[in-house]
Image 1: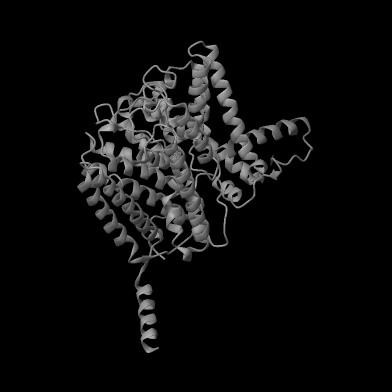
Image 2 (image 1 turned 90 degrees about the vertical axis):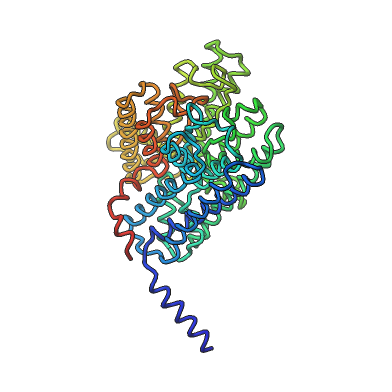
Length: 511
């Protein structure tokens, strides 16, 4: 009994000595999780006789050491709004920067900053790549390094902070705020009474969907088990990285493409809906106005693009359907896979007629649903914007009428509508500013426009010189790629964490 009291007293003293730092605690834990993924990738490299076993193991060790040094001597401190946003933003920056170590140690790229570009593109689930051009090709890399590359998108899809909250039950309501700040979109729903349970259920569902995608691809003719797991990582996360230079076009398989179309639609939908459906609420999709808009948008865009390609006479009907549907869903969910089998083939959409490209550009702006792994401004905001215009027209006809803003059966408060409109204004302004800066740095206008919207929407391929068969090395200078890195991070975290991360970075290190 006496020993038990002494042990409890010792633990209490140790707890009091730990510094209160939400940022260091969460970021350190995130690095520990990523280091585990790097070690698994090192084992894959070892068993496949790859050349980068030592760089991966060294990276895993350094990440683990740094993560442990940040996590072990700290405990969660302040959970006010400024600290929450600073924690999320700085955690993503820290992990994305440290995540470049495997590429740097393996001397993967000609230029050191390309390692950071590939890391940021991976963790932000953008899918833009600097492999190719004067850098080595994807197929020249070891299996373990490519496995790590795919895993960066899997970590980034559901969110490293959500993973940290899953094992930090004592964060309380601050944990829900962390999840909300990290998750793209206006809100984050509880799936369980405790926040840590919500985070665990999200990751459990995410892992389950990833497993099902891997099995479906493995059973299809073409992909090996290794390739299926890699594609499952980057499909569930709507990231779009591939283990082949030609992306999905490597297989030239309508079966593989059909499986991925279905899986990309799942990844672009709200994971809260998926969880409730798994729990037995089969009508949850039908009741969601955003989900209906999401499907209508994808089906309508696919129909329009297929019709444009067919009537333009460039491709036969079957090829128009295959190229049009796959690329619409790929960009509409911000995944970014390509099914082009080479330049000037149906899947190489940069060669499509301008009308079809305009449809793709609109999809690049809005992306998937809130609560999904997709990027973009989100279908919810498009839905609210259209409903707001419709209400404004009704009020113009009858100024005295009381017309609530509704999405299906749900009434949207005016405060939410105002935030949505303000966000879209900032989003558009940032995208156009990115276009201007990229053009100022020497990028042609079409490539700059597509690159800005693609990076901000975490899409992957863009227009002009950076289509589905091109590397971003070919279309953008080094300074321009630096601008794209910033846009990718802003797009993944949305605007507010990045804007508020500088408000109280020092306060996040205090209780």
